[in-house]
Image 1 (cartoon, rainbow, N blue to C red):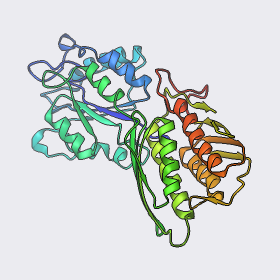
Image 2: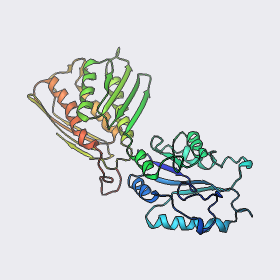
Image 3: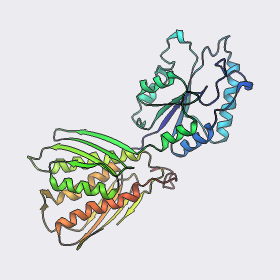
Image 4: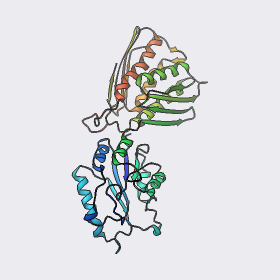
Amino acid sequence: MTYRKILFIDRDGCLIEEPEDEQVDSLEKFRLMPGVIPALLRLKQAGYRFVMVSNQDGLGTASFPEEHFRGPHELLQQILGSQGIEFDAEHIDPSLPEDNSPNRKPGVGMLLEYLRDPDMDRERSAVIGDRETDMQLATNMGLAGLRVGPDGMAWSEVAGRLLDQPRTARVERRTNETAISVSVNLDADKPIGNHTGIGFFDHMLDQLAAHGGFSLELKCEGDLHIDEHHTVEDCALALGEALDRALGDRRGIGRYGFTLPMDESLANVAIDLSGRPVFELHGEFPRESVGGLHTEMVGHFFASLAQKLRCAIHITLVGDNTHHLVEACFKGVGRALRPALAKGEGGTPSTKGML
């Protein structure tokens, strides 16, 4: 699942400067906000989509004729469009404060379709405006609010705040068999702390994160009185979902990762964060279990991880020591993930234009 990052942007005082009479009703009053075009271009390159949300008091009445609004607005559309900046939608509310319209900011009446959209990335979407009503709208939508203008930030700071934030995610998974919470940060290498009730499995998860170069905190209470199957499987599913969410739309990532020798054992690992789940394991473990973890669960863990992370994982094993073979798998997948998760400056690493 690729979640959409959406910015809900005010018009007057945000995209264009707001005159003293608080109404941009002529071309003479029209001025773009400083730095708005470079910032929007950066955000577009990063995969953000734009929705305009603006209160225009009395639009269409004698106090604010439609023709007074259209000239400046069409000029704004023309200038932004010439730079390749377009809005998915424009929500313009003409009501007055005394109308108490649910469509007027900070009311969310015009934006219910977005609030109902399960594909909107709520962790990275935001409301951008210059007034307190915009910040209240952000609160009402459960999104971050970024204020621009004299009482807030410059547009360059807005873009930096959105694009430089760490790639994090938290997932809670509850079933009749397990209760799991997992947090990841792809742009930090600590803390790392995993508690599943299976000491050797905790050690393997520590290795996966440490060699993958990301922070991982995972806690699981599972039905270990039966066996470790549900714990290992559900931890993999929760971890894969968290990594997938943290990756967002996957723009700028390395995508691929390779290699890991572990003493006499060797694990050759290849990973592709392609959006398509596949797992292949070639090789055998000499023993049925190590440290309370059945070796048949190793392949099942990575198959479940690939399913939720939406990636291809290929592992080829050679060696005689089961402990080292299992550890080589987890370390090798971590090392292969490190360059694949790495964030660069480029766009989507695919000629398709999406992963």
